Length: 316
Image (cartoon, rainbow, N blue to C red):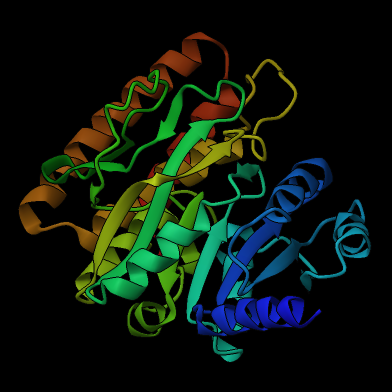
């Protein structure tokens, strides 16, 4: 019995020395996906964390249902859907108010390995010049294939992409490295960096908000890191794909946000030269895509891209 008490006390003391981590998950009518994510968090080896579930204007009662099934979570509720940015900002503000050391944005359509959080947290603790880190992210449906092994970026055209997406994982991305941006799918950031750079930009609502935040964190003097020794799995688009219609699987509104927000990003972070080049590229690309969609009869998407293009150029 004495040995048991000593071991328990040792575990408690080790936990008290760990940085406090808030894991923020935004739920919008996504009971099944969010439940699976929360179930996977039950097996975490890391102990000093609090899961914060932000119910983002759900109309299916999923927020309260999940709280009843996972009483250990902190439930925050928004009356309306305030987007990926607004929902996460509610959780981020709660974490800052409660003096958490690090904040993890985690998509609700992910499953995690039990040991995924330890190397991420440790890296930030041991490297104060880094503001945020991300894991290697695999496809949930095909766990031997990659979804994101860091962010790709071509500055002159302000183009971004997920490195390794769809590739068979043969260890080709097993070297940790700095990354120009981190995906919001799994974005661990130190609270000090948030206080310095600010929270997510609510104008974005969804899409490219993670790239913009990454750029802002870097402008605040921090570096970003990809750590392949940490691994999670992503359903990929589980919260955005709908039943297939004549407009396809992806709703037209998503094309609006992607088009508008990419231009928001260009306006906020490009140099004079890259602004001109990237604006020309985006204009030609969007025009070509609208022609393609028009030939397929997907006129709602054509309209969404056109509206997104002008909103991205002229709205504040």
